[in-house]
Amino acid sequence: PKATVTTSPSFKRLMESRGIRRIKDHYRPLPVSGVVAAADALSDAEVAAVRNELTAGHPTRPVMTYVGRWSAEKRMHLLKRCRPRGATLAFVGDGPMRDAVMEWHDPPRCVVLPGMRPRTALAGVYRATDWLCSASAFETFGNVPYEAAHCGTPALLQDAQGFKDQIDASESRGALLDFDADDGEQLCAAAMDRTSRLLNAPHVVRSEARKMANRGTCIHAVVSEIVTKWSAGPVRKRRWIYLACAIWSSLVLASILQVMSFFMRLGMAIGVDFTTGMKNQRMSKRRWALRKTPTSTVELARMRSLVRADASTAKGDTRGDDDKESGRRSPDENVAPNGFAVGGERSRANRKFREGSPPKVTFAPNTQEPTPTWSRSSLDRPRHRAPVRPMFPLRVFLAGF
Image (spheres, rainbow, N blue to C red):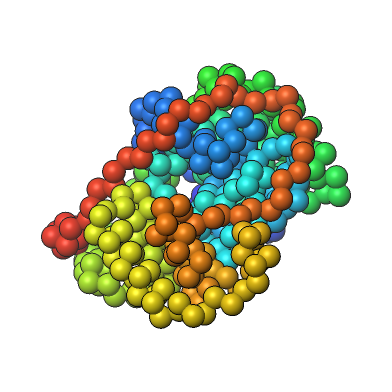
């Protein structure tokens, strides 16, 4: 190729070290104006509600949050191992490791909040948390800490390519550390102590993030330079024919993509999933919509299903009195995230629900932990949930054109 453009300076150096030549530059980061506008529009009460959710009702505890895809290459288990005592670690997102990450839920030490959220909702997470964190050792850039920095939130990141371009030696946007070191917990606590000054100075983090917004090049500049050099070169026969063929091929490809997009949107509208990713995305959006805007119809359907299930399993509760009184879930008992019991062992939770009290949620036994000195101002105002805009089939049909 005549020119190769990558995602960040550190990733450019990594590619050059592996023998890839003619790397011209790196792209500018993606625009974050929408996330910043959503963050600025949030009230203190809305931010307090999100922080209360991240800390499971303990807003005064320091909280570090991982936002993104739950997959093996993100090395999320290192974040859990390096969590300092007295701090809360929250996981927000979804992915292939959903079942494993859900087992880590242990409030207020570790809080797991599954479900993909729109970027406007993530703006509240960015503002409510104290630090964004990631232990991924192979990032091309890292959009999540970049967005969080524009919202005024520092980050604790793995010392690897991509992240190195966002945090320098001044640590004005957070700190770099080695999460897989033997003393990872001490390193994380020391990094939190060094960057605690940024918790009450979000303008410093935002200012440093804005300096990076215009670094690098864009697609328009790369294409314009190639076209200029090509036009100024020696006159070639049939070059206009080549250009016309290229334009025609681009139009044909764009038409094919539009047709594919139309049929994929139509299939999604009627419930057909072409790929596993589309299925996971649709199910995540459905869970998020049900969680954000529960309706009386949905609750009535849940009640009816619980009554039918309880009638069919009324004689199936044979556990001992000690197990019933302890409130601890048995290994084969499955409790849905919305608080309703599902599966074979559901009668006890359904009986408590009909008696007027919600099903009991049991966490690991609490132990006394020292409270660190770093913390933001207490945010304990009432929760506010924004409505979710419904998607109509007519809009999906018109979006294909």
